[in-house]
Structures are given as structure tokens and as C-alpha cells.
Length: 208
Image (cartoon, rainbow, N blue to C red; front, side):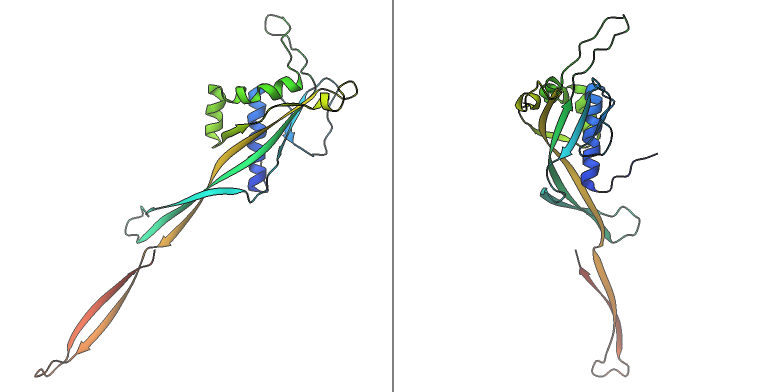
């Protein structure tokens, strides 16, 4: 079943969730504020929340090219907006080490460690290629926060967060008429001629 986001903002949130999932091979990365079970103790998860509104579109530019259809007098006009959004990514719980193929226990990263390393992880070649395929670019990575330490980690489970500013282009394309034309029939009489002369004039107006 394919996922159809309700809004453009939801679509961007979904892409960031997928990016974090691939970055750390996590199985539970979801949008924040969902009414779902948090899972068993010791099973890590992460949440993603876009902190900016749907209307935070930045600079834009317009480009125009001819419609490639044979005989067309239309033009294809594209308006490209650069959508910038700040995403709060939060990690919960310490990852339980998993044995590798040799049977040796791996190293499990804590929530704050994952938040601290996310910016560097996303700058590696495989993640850059994935980001590019989704039209996502990273503009800024904040300092990670050890949330558990801020609220007394002796009573709360491991938790770390980081804010990342992303940009993505949003294109709006229109097919517009470039030329409007009209034919006008004229009849006019010249002195000394028994019949009026006849002429057809085509008037053109560029409307773009």
C-alpha cells in the first residue's frame, strides 16, 4: 500500500523519517505526537516533527520555455519555490547491542549519541545520494541536546534531540498561451475603380 501524505508538510516529514531510518538502520522512526505504543523497554525509537508552518516558502524564481508539442503556440512556465523547514528529531532509549555474523556483540549507541552523530552521518556519501534522490538538502545542524540530563536522567529514559534545517524545491508548472491571433477582413475603394479592394489582415498579440 502506498502512502499518500495529506499535505506537503506531511510529505517532507515522511521523507525525513525515511532518511533517519536509513541512517541508523532503525525500525521505528515516526512523526511525533502519534497515539501508538512506545514499545518495550530497551527498544529504541525516534520521532520527527517539522517545527515550521506549511507556508514557510522562501525565495522563488520563474523560468519559461516553449511547449515541445508540434504546432503549439503555448509556453511552459515553471515557478520554483525553495521550501525551508526546521525538523526536530528526537531519539529515545539506548540501542541494545546486536550480535554480528561472527557472534560478537556490537556497540549500541545511546539516544544522545545518535542525536550528536546524525549531522555527520547524513554527510556521508550514501546518505548524500539518498538525500539528493529525495530533493532534500541540509542547510544547518544544531547542537545536540541531552534531554535526559536536562530532566534528571535518573528518573527518565535515555533521550537526545537535534534540530536540522532542510531545504527542498517545490515546482509549480503552468501551460500558458503565448500568442493570440485574429483575422480581419478589410474592403476599401480606391478612386477610379469600379469595385473595392479586399484584404485579410492577421493581427497577433503576444500575451505572455
